Image 1 (cartoon, one colour):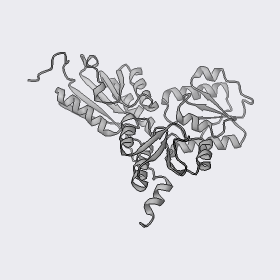
Image 2 (cartoon, one colour):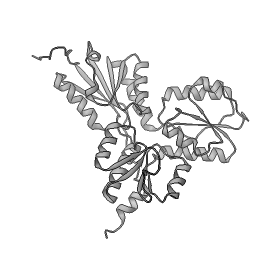
Image 3 (cartoon, helix red, strand yellow):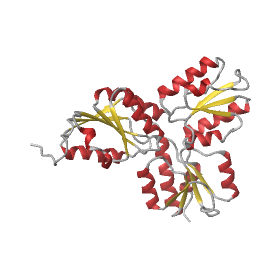
Image 4 (spheres, one colour):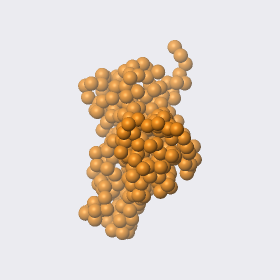
Length: 327
C-alpha cells in the first residue's frame, strides 16, 4: 500500500513521454562544440551569449571552464578562443571578433545559417524581407543583422495588417526557426492575403525539431490531464510547447527541473505527459520520471510520433583541430 507524506497528493497513474523530445541536432552540435573546445584548448573558452537556452546546460559548461559573455567587449582577451552560440550572430559580430584577433568557432545551427543565407539572397535581389519572429531573440537579432536595411520584423497578424512596404510586388518572407508552427502558418497566410505576390523560402524555415516536438505534443496532450515541459524560460521552442498543450485543453507548465513541480498541479491528475524543449538534456526528463516513480507512479510509456535521425557535423574549426597530428 502506498504511503504519502502529509500534504502530498496521490501520484498520477501514468506518465506519457513524448517522442521526439529534448536535444535537436543543432543543440547537440553546439554543446559538443564547447566541450571539444575545452578539451582542445583548455579553459577558459569564451562563449558569446548562452550556447543554448538552457540553464542546466550552461551551468554544467560554466563549471568546466566556459565563460559566457553578452558581448565581445574587453572581458574577452585578444586572441581568446571564442564560440558563437547556436542562435547565430550578425556580420558585425564576426567583424568585431576578427578585428580583435579572436580565435572564433561558429556553432550556429545549420538551419539558422540557412535562414541567414535566404536573407542575403533576397536582399541581393532587391526584396523587402518580412522576418516572422520574436523581438529581442538572439536568432532574430543575428538574422536581421545580415541585411538590416532590407528586413522588417513582424510578430503577429496585426503586425502584418500594419505593414507599409515600398513595393508590395517585391516582397519576401523568412522566419525564426523555433516558432509555433500553427501561429507562423497563420501569419504567412495573412501575408499572402495582403500581398499576393510575396515569395518565400523553398523549404520551411521552422526547424524539423520544433515541428516534430509540437506534433508529438498535439497528439499526446488530449490524452493527458497535465503536460509538463522541461525547458528554460528564455527557450522559445519550449514556451511554444506549453502553448500547444494549453490550446488543446491540457493544463501545462514550463519547468527547469523536477524541483519546480508544484503539489497543486498534481491534484486529480491521472495521466501526466512529459516533454522537453530542444535545448533540454534527457537527464532532466529522467530525473522527472524518477520523481514520479518515487511518489508511486508505476506506468511509464513512450509516446512515439516521429523518428528522428538528423545529425550535423561539428564546426570546421573543431574538426580540423581534432584531425591535426599531436605535437
